[in-house]
Amino acid sequence: MKLEQLMEDVPFTLVQGTLETEIEDIIYDSRKAAPGLLFVCIVGTQRDSHDLAADCVAKGVNTLVIQHDIDLSAMPDVNVIKVESSRYAMAKMSANLFGNPSRQMTMIGVTGTKGKTTTTHMIKSVLEAAGRKVGMIGTNGIYFLGHHKETANTTPESYELQKTFRQFLDAGCDTALMEVSSQGLMMDRVAGIHFHVGVFTNLSPDHIGPGEHKTFEEYRSWKGKLFQRCDIGVVNIDDANTEALLEGHTCQLVTYGRGEAADYRAGEYQLLRTHDFLGVQFHVSGKDDMDVKVNMPGEFSVYNALAALAVGKVLGLPDEAIHEGLGKCVVKGRVELVPISKRFTILLDYAHNEVSTESLLTTLRAYHPHRLVVVFGCGGNRSKLRRYGMGEICAKMADFSIVTEDNNRFEKVEDIIADIRVGMEKGNPDAKYIEIPDRLDALHYAVDHAQEGDLIAVIGKGHETYRDREGVKTPFLERELLEEYARQIGLE
Image (tube, rainbow, N blue to C red; front, side):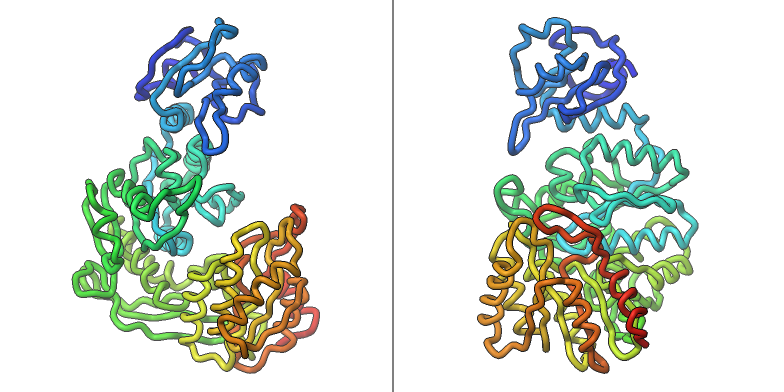
């Protein structure tokens, strides 16, 4: 593609060279430098890749996109484009390079602090029940028509995002569904994408600190940008931050919640539990009138289901598809049941901090199990506050805890458990727990010592497929390991 075509709709100044140059591909990683490529120089939080421009040119790169002036005296033959924001320019150029695929699909973006992953899976399930062909991008990876691959970020970098949309379109997808993080909005990963539907789940303090957001207000403001880039906003009207988050919105609003003001509102919900089902059922009124059954527990599942239902209604999907999609949706590692016994219930969840752990255990306690048992650890090379907090919450709320490893990374598991123990002592000095450093041994112990009617939550790793020790990742998929052990011991 000619450089001139690549720069369509991108404000720029041609510093030197010609727009007639053929560009084979766009890169922003200097290690991929090669002849015929365009290198985007980005000012990052850790380093400024403008410093690497000369090295890239030496390896054959024929075009540079810069955000600030650099010394070009030794690079007289390279094309140089100057832009106000390299990240924004890369997003627009990437869209042009791949033929602006997002314009040819129904685009749905979901933002919020909690519930993004579950809500996107619910929406995907509803869409597919209606016959739509869906590509999905988020924390659990990229899914489209039987394909799956991992992602480094909840919202991938703009180049990868546009390349993925192209794959969706070429595979036959008519809808692209994605989690939109505040970082993805702030760092222009979704620049140039217009969403047909934007969804807001909820908001609480998160991603605030060095390299992320300076304040909660900034975090909230960036989340709200989605609703200046969509046609219809489907929003949780019950969240205390909704009004502030929507400041300056340009979209039509559709609301959901439990209060009378919601367009789609849920009445009282009923808890349902069997050995292979842990969920809720409730009635929806307002702009619709239907009963809903969801195979996920707790009030947050009601909210997530309402969001998915509202999206289905906005897109004109039939009620049968909404019923079917919500009823059969299962999200890997998000309150995911592993039905290995009729005597007790065991599930996996990604809860890996104090807030999410408290929310999960509060939800599970409402099902009145014989015992609420939790298997957990904390990641190495991460804040010790998380260890104290999770230890304190589990000591207070669980009947029995099995303290083990998570991803230790480069720390000793004994040191991590010692920190968790401090939190346990603070939460409840009389808490009942056992320490089993090896996570596989801890899973086996949980199964071997399960009592009739127990509800066992294995938390922290959720959908992850590996165990990280000393920086070495080895396969570790908890669902498969539990199922294999159940077969091994002949569990019924």
